[in-house]
Length: 287
Length: 316
Image 1 (cartoon, each protein chain N blue to C red):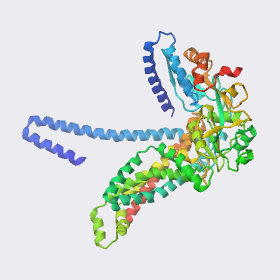
Image 2 (cartoon, chains in turn green, red):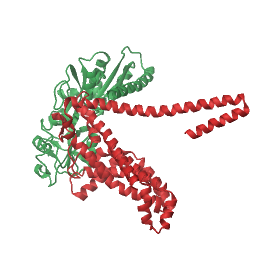
Image 3 (cartoon, one colour):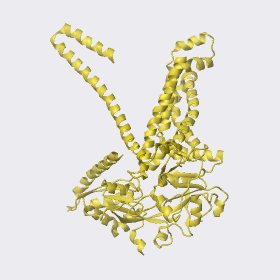
Image 4 (cartoon, rainbow over the protein chains, first blue to last red):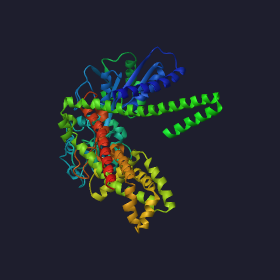
């Protein structure tokens, strides 16, 4: 497994190196050199790839290899020295449910990721409170009529244990509440795409997902404690289900890695490409 | 292989006797290329063995680390799989894998052997030449396509028929898998039945058998070895299939007590969790042990069916 991963990283590096060297011919001379390997969360991967593309135009001699697998592989790869940056959906320098802190790593905030509670289009409920969600996910509430809907069994769809989305949803939406497996009407999915398909095709289903995935008429996002899941509500502080996305580094970043993280955190990138990818700039949260 | 090689060599010798010096070169050249080919074939089979050996060694090495942390008893006989509480009992997955495979074969084998008989014995020529290419096409469809159809077509149907809220479970997975292995089993059985010599049938008809009797008493027993290897191939595909199963089984680590209990098998649990585990964790070792177990299960199943096949042949 480890050997395979190293091979994959090497292969990716090679591909990107070739691309970079072609791009380099046109760009201006630049003193910044180096190789940056980014590993980890798939949720942050589009952002990393876009940033890498733009950064390499500015600094043609820097080679960036990015790959995505699962949140926890990010800080792990950094710990093993396989990657310089580990993209992670939670702050891996502190303990979270299920995962111990990675000692000596620094968490660099790069984006705000909003999450939404979603239901199948046939569900009549359009608002759920923290207590109601806790009840649904712990298995105490099993029928939609208990939360103001029609008389139908609730089909709970969740992400597998270890998913970054699940860690954040449990912490923010369920206020640390448990997700308990059941013998009926309970299903786990392996990715955000599967989650969307499962909720879209299963009547009476409830699930949760990155807000960027909420589209189409088959699913709808429900309000959380009366507040609609929109980026505006995240920014003004009324919608609480969101989390920072982090770049984990071994100690404070240096050299090309530092430059790259600075670029991702820069106003130009945060308000430009990052917004286009439907993430929220970190600066927006301070207001 | 042996006969043609000898043939070539002796021919080269004869011509060298007739034509003298020039043909001696040719003889040497043939000798050389024959030797080279022998090494090439030997190399091919050794390369395959090496890869298989590496797979077993590497998976096994990581897998066995598991038993430093938990006892084999817990792993094989506990039904409690909760990585968040450091409980790694894989019994539920093992039982689910076996029951899913059994259920799949139960659905697929009778249908596919029936189709094979139809193709080989009964159908008119135009129908044969229509069914066979269609089946070949079905073999080539990627499993994710079957899984997606299962998710979007089969599950809603099962929900309507059964009244379940979800529909995910062993039955849905077995139906998808049965559809997947059906063409494989059917095509190979078909070939086996066609290969039964015509004189067997003629003899049976001459003794006054009906067509059903010929098929059931003569053709199928005579083709049984081929049909068994078809079933083996279908079964290994069913045991190892991952993507299609993940989409319809519900992926919940628990024993499938009913056909509609959302559950998980060895393959689906590995693929669901492998990207979320830490490298040096008991959890990772447990997943590797499950992969190793899959290797063993396929091996044992194949062995059992081979032995069964031999016994039946001896009895016949």
